[in-house]
Amino acid sequence: MIATKNHTAVKNYTIAAALISLVVLFTGCANSSQFPVTSLEDSNQSAGVTDPGSTDPGDDTDTGVTPTPTPAPEPEPEPGYKMQALAWESTKYPERTEWSKYLQELILNEWSSLLPGADDITTFCPKYNTLDNNQRANAWAQLFVAIAKYESAYSPVSRMHETTMGTDPVTGGKVYSEGLLQLSYQDVQWARYCKFDWQKDKNLAPTDPKKTILDPYINLHCGVGIMAGQIKSKGRIVVSSGVYWAVIKSGGKYQQINNIAAIVKTLPLCK
Image (cartoon, rainbow, N blue to C red; front, side, top):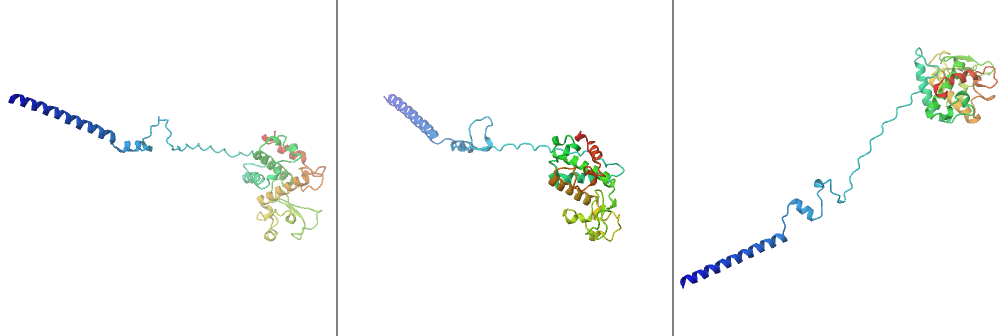
């Protein structure tokens, strides 16, 4: 009888222990489903925030972040225009190469009104209308060089007394044509862009290269401006009246039109 009771007690205890284990197990699972493990990564994902440092590059999900585009490479700068040599250039006179460069820049930047050309420009440069602006400036520069050849023989200190022009109102003396393009002090009265300064020059010797009118750059600047004015008013390089230089006067005694045109045409870009 005592053995039976003991057996029953053990059985009851075993059942109770099993029930308690089931209750504990069930409670643990319930707690686990309500309160998941919270690592930093899990927390960000459950909150709908993506860690920008852990984005999978193969994931197509729109993260709302616009990527910064890779900038396009900078284009290589085009090389500068290589000017075709002008007729007066020579290793014996290296300064003339600098005059050429100055003429090119002067025409491009200050007297660009010449670039559209003139009605008779193809007489001097047959391909002119097919050229770009750098090439057109190059052709005009050659034209001024050709004029200078027959006006001054490329001598920046050349002077000639104009016997039929009376008195120069600026100098009070005889009129002289001077420098590369054979210009006069009196030109400053109507061509304000000409920078000849008689007050600086009057005490210098007639052919002193320090004279402003004999400065190649000042002389060329004035001469290009005079031509630009002629093209604006007459539309032509060669005219029969109102022309500044006798060497391009149509029908004139001293005209050198064909020779000047021949020099300009020696430029490869004009052929």
